[in-house]
Length: 119
Length: 114
Image (cartoon, rainbow over all chains, first blue to last red):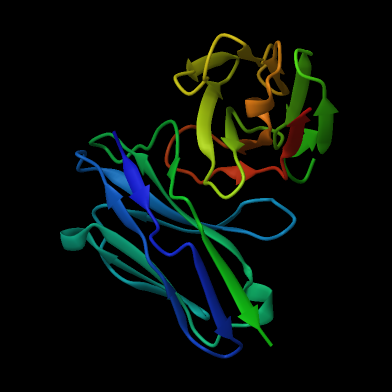
């Protein structure tokens, strides 16, 4: 069975600080996808990024960056120069895929990290 | 519609009653998922549909829970003999197919069993 662990329950920062959200996963499968979702107070989960298990290249998108390290089974997410609008719950998730890279079925989510950015 | 729509947004019911939660996926999306999110937890998988059929219902907690998607679009999650422990936010998501694409989530139905 798969497992996703987000050890940080809550993080509080002041605006403009950088913040890193940790995610560690467990799976015996070699082919999978990892995701980060944002859940603002409205409740809707907003997709941020997807990475497949064969691509360990780090990615930067604006103020967001992701560090995927297969050796440590980690997929950490960094927000640079945080803003109040970044306040939300952030979820890391995993989905299995077949040998051809086709993902299927259910997402396994971590417990989430509550990020509060103070002005 | 533009996004995944779930109705009602809030539902309060008495213990022992029957409830139905509705999900309208994004038009054209063939895959549909139901998750349950308890307070302070991540979403937990319940069931997913590929078209009209349930491809995986391994997350349904017991036989009081049932979901249908008769025409491959709208889905209804049905809970019989509700219990206080069923109180949670029920999230629906859809994706264009079951292969390799991210799921788009609705805002959820908050179910409270009193």
